[in-house]
Length: 314
Ligand code: ACO
Image (tube, rainbow, N blue to C red):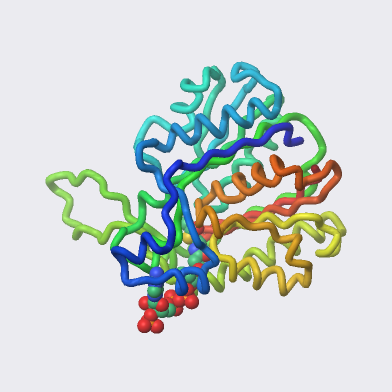
């Protein structure tokens, strides 16, 4: 594949750490030190498909394509306001595309999984695919639970991919291990259901997730580097899932590469789940920070545990 356009969108409303201090037993100092997050954007008047539509339109515009030029949408999402239909099918109609649509859920690693699905579809004859990650993790946290709700923000990122040879390596892994990171959805109960009502909202053992994230991301990154016979410092940009600045720092220090090679926007955006890598990619692209021929490593990890990394030449 080759990426020929990028786009992203975040909600208009920005929540600062100080705003969280007003109703949670937390502090700007704690959140900044432990995570690097200063602000995040939350949906107020928007719905998630509104953000998806904007990101898709911006990606198409940057690729110089019309919605009807797209012959598939592959969209990563964990949670949105609709149980059905799929988020990709909602966005397809609103942007005026007519192609088949598919949602995938690989938690925070989903954007890279979606890229891999798109790569397979390109090999299968598709020509131009819109790959998206559209996420509202703020819908799944308990807004009284300071250990999780301060971490997240909403947003959408998109790329248009076409036939090409710029995806140089891909590694996906899933290790079934739900306990440190899971969330029950509130669903209908039949009159005969005898299970006790679970505790809804996202549950996370932060330290365990931290440890798994660092180890798995390092393994994935080393694997794609080995496939391409590259040393860590031969990569121009490492775009990691924006979950925690300390996780990124720990990975960077182990790889022994310069901080400039680990761009981040977590301080502004919080953790936008699988959209984080896609939004960061678009922001860097629009700021002209990625040059033709640059080597990018994308790496993400999330519930499952699902992890993924890929190496792309720009
Ligand atoms: N404000 C103030 N204090 C808090 C807060 C808060 N928002 N949250 C927790 N604390 C307290 C805890 O209660 C605890 O208090 P205690 O010592 O009295 O028990 C103390 O701070 C330390 O808590 P820890 O959980 O040990 O703090 P830690 O340094 O591990 O940081 C964090 C927590 C930020 C969640 C970290 O573990 C982390 O980032 N883990 C990985 C999370 C992650 O990557 N998630 C991504 C996957 S999820 C997804 O992307 C959908």
